[in-house]
Image (cartoon, rainbow, N blue to C red):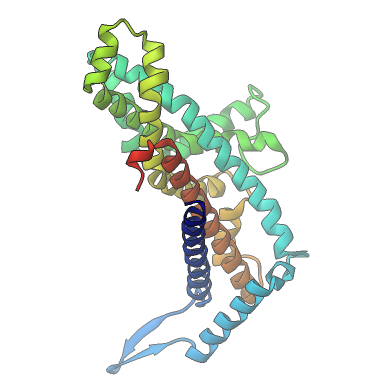
Length: 309
């Protein structure tokens, strides 16, 4: 029995590793196509502004550099791509994780409060539910940036509103990236409590005098966790898209900031910028895949044994 279990775990792990390898290879091949690639239809024939041999050469070069590890030694702007990836990645991942944590810390309690006030109606209550989803994401970020700029310029706050010189510069990006996922988790929490409140065992527990705290700790918490983990892919997409906007608007030099710089060839070296674009895209893809698989593992761990696939 134990041997069969180990074999099953090994098969699943091998499948996930193979999929990750295919994902990395696909990202390298796609991003190896020059950013100025253009396909025209002229005089009854398709024409491109480069050659297929050149594109295949870029693909082979990027694959060789990545899987040999030499891609991290490629020089760019007086430093290596590996060093730039390490520094910018640490900044982006810090903002990402703390933003997710902040969204969870205010989103779940807000969802619980929204459910408690479900019987109350009012314009303000309706607005606070739909406003985060109805406003364009860039407008939310702009509002936080304008507020931060006003406070900093008038010496009402020591927190800088743009650039990066220390950990204080991370505060506004963390606040901005937590808004949409926090609002989404609040919505999920309120809906999960509403659905679970209809279950017979919840009604029986209430009838026996079970306190709201015990109801939440024993019954509601697992259901909320499963719902949030189930929506985790959507939350990740929200946060990754927010990260691109936030890093550009706050001039925060993280992964996606340099990714756009590479795509626009703002570094001055087209060839090395293309290699950097490939490396940073692969890093973000691997990061997303690891987070997604981590959420799936937590979800399967939280489920009762009989409900697991």
